[in-house]
Length: 196
Image (cartoon, rainbow, N blue to C red; front, side, top):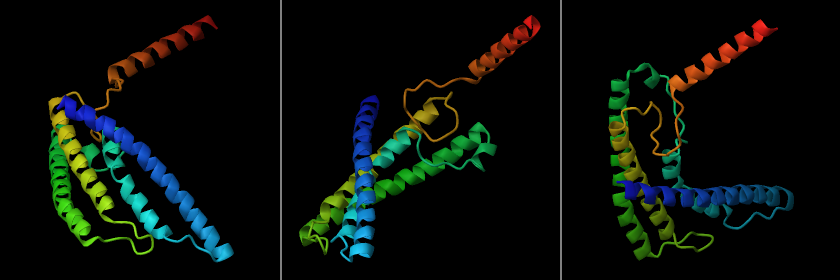
């Protein structure tokens, strides 16, 4: 599992760089298309199709967001559960999500082969669509594997606090150390007050 996780970390970081570049291209292209269309009546050919390609290119970054604890979370209900309740909720939600991603990945390979056989291309730019089907398919497969590994890690690591699952090796600051720092700061302030 450690080797798989290492590979996922390397690949996810690479896909994150690609996703940032794709987002930058998408923003510049959209702004340029709007400016040229409204001020010069000369829109960029295939701008919408390129935007779709860039959106698909960004999907592998889901794995990076998961491993780096970057997904949006709403703890209104979950925060009120005990650790056991949180673990049960995690197990159900993550297993369901992983199963759905595996299903999308499985079906995606058939769709990719179908588009390749049909020689389907984008209307304006005449670029084949199958590579982008393949990118999305692989992204969903990687995401499913990452979810399963993170869920296993959650159950193995009993000390891990509640939150989006992450296997990053960044040291966590414990509550005990926080309390110690507050206590030390309080003592220093008291001594300072006596000296004054």
